[in-house]
Length: 215
Image 1 (cartoon, rainbow, N blue to C red):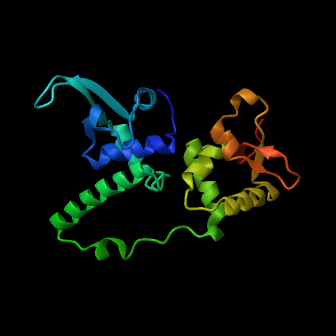
Image 2: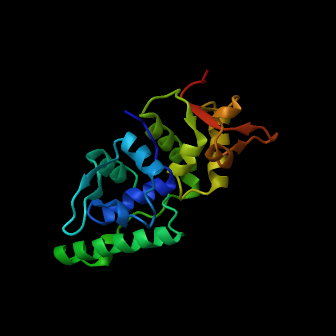
Image 3: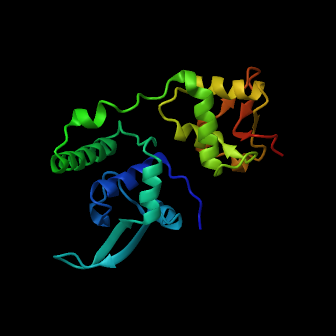
């Protein structure tokens, strides 16, 4: 089974499906578009499944649905980066709010009852603890496992880049983290280059180990 961490656009696609009840026709999944490459990646990760089905009218076409694992991923990643500032992100937010409206009306709840007691976004002062929690969430709770900084940053969209960099440097200074670069250029993708951590001397770091020195 493929262990895939969806990219922001792929997470947005999963939320697009969730906002329409967890399923939809491929031809309707245009904001954002579920193209063949993204569909194959999400299917390989067992987050979605697809099959040819006949709609109420017209010819058979591809039907896409979230799997139980897909629903589980969404439940565990409510803070995932969704690129909400894009037109596709705006459309997904609109659909989710429509679902929320129906839920509140059925339960006779107000938006204030739902949100008034919600915790505030994480403060930068908690950055070291948040970085540690993100690392272990990605590593499956295991220490001394190689984790890409791109995945850590993706998991902490509400935390400023500067705050996370300070936290990583603090953890390394305390001997709790070790930062490394990827020596093989073929391993360094666009996400790694975007998420790179630069040491005070200007050296690049792409991966982190917590709980022991990686090898």
